[in-house]
Image (cartoon, rainbow, N blue to C red; front, side):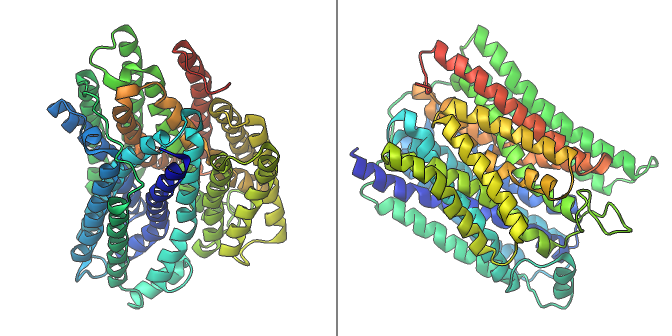
Length: 558
């Protein structure tokens, strides 16, 4: 394809990235609404994220099993373009299913909440197929060493969706900005907020999904992305993933069943049991990936894409990356609203306890940090001169920051703006030091992530708060680096490897509740050691994968 056609195809492709971010971030508004409306506890409300992110795993796994059973790479035979179209249609079906799911529901109708989860799960299944197709599609639209930059551009559009999604959804549901818990509860009790607003929202979302599918279908400049490569069965990988799935289903089923359990040992025993089950599911993921890595190194037969160590290491990297990206912000609200000092009404950071409404701008700032980094990472896609590129590396982050400030007008003090501006400046230095190299980028920003989390753990006040918030800045460009490095050199196994990587978005469903349960046992601030460990593995992945790829004659550092 010509550069012009590549750019046109990429422009069309990034529309789906927007949807992913819009819906995923909107869950942050939807979760407290469900908690209040359906009269459920915090863990149950978090099942919204579990259903959404869990669908990624099950969708990608199902695609792999079907391909393995038919001895044909289904996605390759469809083509990446058709894979995205089919995924959009599935997501539209899930969005449409939301209408009958909540029709006639009343406050406290807990069973209706589970219908909602099913509908969201179907939406997530569609997203799983879209992601599995879109990621390697973006990689294929140009030079391999620029793949991470194209993914950064798409990620920047995704982050724009995460920035405006909560605001748009809040306006639709509440008719205003996100409410405090007390305000929301009062409006629900007074029947001022009705569930039929959700019906209207998801009918609109379904229409957008179908419009995007039509855009892809009728786009003449968008290649099919088909491959005639013969599917190589990966029976060992299939058996391992099925076994992992069974373990996770068992663990989470036992967690759910524990809500009807009365133990003579008390509530603490039940909470520790839930944490133990979540840790077992985490250990199962790590153990299975380690087993695949060791076993395939001795005998690659039957492992398919997992015979490549960069892919197996990348699976765990995606798992930890999504986990740390989600867990930092998902536990941030509890950190800021938790009453640590009752006498002075202070949270664990020594700041005044915040309401949900006061927390919302900081959550927006976190997701906005992801947008900042991804916009900067996408600069190279447009092939600017070296001199212009250096200026853009400085200017673009603050333009993106300006958009965040505009979206949240009047929400931040001058001091808070200056502190985050300093964090952005550190990110800019990191970009100059990384020099657009995926491995170097991972090393630098994972290291900055560790430093930020340690500062947050051992300090208080705004310094600790903005250290945790800067995690979004440092996570911002890791996904494309991990993805492009993980599928490098996979050849005919590229789409299969992409499916394995998408499965590992599961980290967003497992790591956050583990940190949440750990917070219940120790403290919410201390629970951020989980984030330190995640960043630690990402540094290890960068060093290890560089050596693995060099042995195969592949280098992105030249």
